[in-house]
Length: 186
Ligand SMILES: [Zn+2]
Image (cartoon, rainbow, N blue to C red):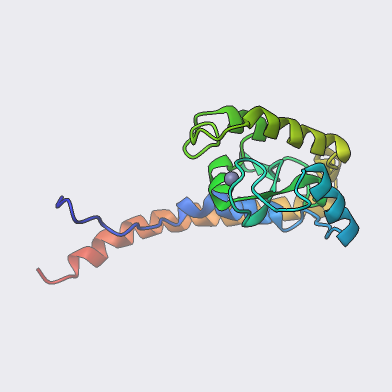
């Protein structure tokens, strides 16, 4: 392939499975908007009353990131969207961290992790985030209890149907693609 060329990315139908699974769980995970006083307290614990920065690396804050992922390995972790589980972050860190456990990720050599970017004071940052966890323990949904509910079973059955249909559709698409290709005049 020419060094100045790369094919545009294509998507597959089956490749959407984890996105859809995540959407099914995200759709039922509760979220609580914090009060102004709660945000003030949060920033005080994080030492950011004067200036908002990324809690992980100190760069400009662009978003509030879930400290504990809501979904991991296509399963809900039980954590929810609430101030105790949200910290100011930058997009770089948020993307690099993904669904991994924050403390392991900070110290890891994952691409664009604070350690791999040689951010100073990593241990101090970890200590701050641990203080944050003790300020307010993040709450968790008991999903084992939820799994006993008929509504949950219906929701899960719908998800399984959608995933099955994605698979079927991919198989059909795989058969159609060569037909489409052969219809193009050479
Ligand atoms: Zn960052």
